[in-house]
Length: 333
Image (cartoon, rainbow, N blue to C red; front, side, top):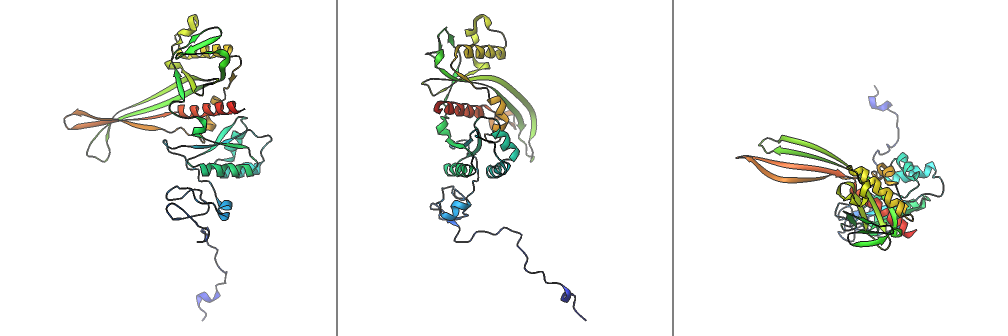
């Protein structure tokens, strides 16, 4: 009697379902921590130090696109308007590199203005993205946060103005209307969620109170010749007495009147209203991150403690970065 396994046909070797790894010769040793890394990486997997570039690594390297932390310097890859339409093959390949969908990348390229397509914490990764996009025939620019002039002191908040026929004075600085080079209006949105919890011995805390707030504010950024700062007028923090009889009781109406007045007086200035149009596309790369803060412990009554936590999300940092980008590009053009 034949055995059951005698009639099983020979199918040959089975192909492995897992991707084949790299050989020991292909691995790249980090010069800082001496650990081996795949040749596809730009920075060390363990200590984030830049890895030495070899011939094999130059072909295999892929950007990780790890975003920087809040305190870290960021590097931004800016896609410039293209001279001709981008083919579907290039869009698909570039989208896979940038970890975007082809539809999103197509939308970015169709806006006609320079927009970010990648933001990393490593200059080496940003340069790799630049080279890969250049090889695909795409025009791009790599700028660090320092190149854009982003710092806590880059934005000067204007509280009042003194308007004359040929000049304007603010914060003890007088300049002519002809000195205004660039005007960027925008809307800032902020959501704030507050929660108050009572500490208990249970795994979950007792929620005592919750509140949610939303703020929508119009702002105007403008740039003055020979001054690298961003001058910002906010609807809720400005004294509109400079409007005289035109001043109304509604802040959003006043800032609209002020914008029209500035645009009319600064006839040589470029008015850039693109932010509100491209804000959703900026969110793909320059994502608005929520920030959580604690108001500290409070004693409700003997033996009962509570804590307040507030989470805030605002697009102000995103707009500041875009505003500085538009100023940088206008200054070098």
